[in-house]
Every structure is written in structure tokens, then in C-alpha cells.
Amino acid sequence: MEIRHELPEAERLCNCGSVLAEIGADVSEQIDYVPAKVQVLRHVRVKYACPGCEQHCAHLGNGGLIQPLAREWLTLQEPKLAPATFSKAVWTLETLIFPGLGNRPISKIAAPDLLAVLRKIEVRGTYETAHRAKQRCDECRRRRRREFV
Image (cartoon, rainbow, N blue to C red; front, side, top):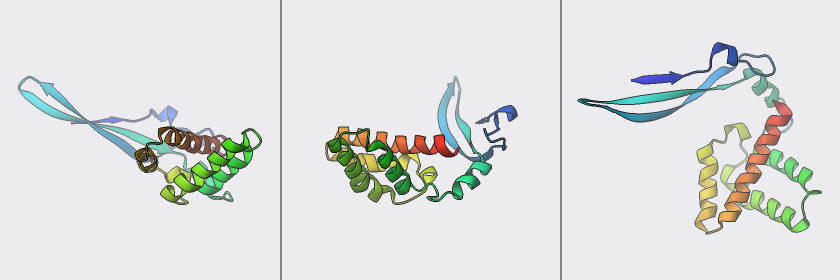
């Protein structure tokens, strides 16, 4: 049995006024036991995105690529951070994050992609570094959303 979770029509509007388009779905399965009957309930949670905003973002100079976005974020953070903290942030992104994620659009980096990179950092026993790397990636993603969507 499949249970589809969709947004109501009234909630499928972007802040820019465009209608959100379906871009995929997260699927999870749940075992449901009813005496004398076992069934699998498939939950499909539909994901949406605004085609208008995607087109707008594609015309930006850096195209939403992670490396230019992260470097812009670093430039903004430099006056706020102590020199040692700033150096560590640059090292974390350039040495640990960029090689693992390449220079893909930040919107195309899925959670499993980032998790794989963070797991490589954790394997070394540097859990705090992995935590900080995740925070820095999240800041870049949030900054992108605030400015362009």
C-alpha cells in the first residue's frame, strides 16, 4: 500500500509567486502488522522546488557552485573570526570539503554526499572537525537561500 504525502495546492507557491514543481520524493517503508495480515506501507513524501527561482539562480555569476559560495562566505567571515579560526575554516573547506564534493551546485549536493565526506573526517577521530565542517557547509547553504530565493 502506498501513502502519498503532498502539499495542498494552496501551499505550492514560492515567495516569488511561481507554482512549485515536483522534483522528487523521499520514500520510506514501514512494516504494519495486523493480526493475520502483514503489509508494507510505503510513505512517499513529495519534494518541490520553484522553477522560477532555479532559473534565476542559474543566471548568477557563480551558478550556485559550492566553492565560490564558500569562498564568498569566508570573505564575509574573515573580519568576524580570529586569525587562527579563519585559517582553520579555510583549511577545512579547501582540504576536506572541496575535494570530496567537487565543484557542484550546492543545490545538487544531497545529504548522503555530504555525509560521506564527513564520515571520512570522522574516521580519523576528528569529530569536532567534522562537526565544524558540517556547520560551515550549512552556513553556505543558508546564505545561498537568504540571498537568492
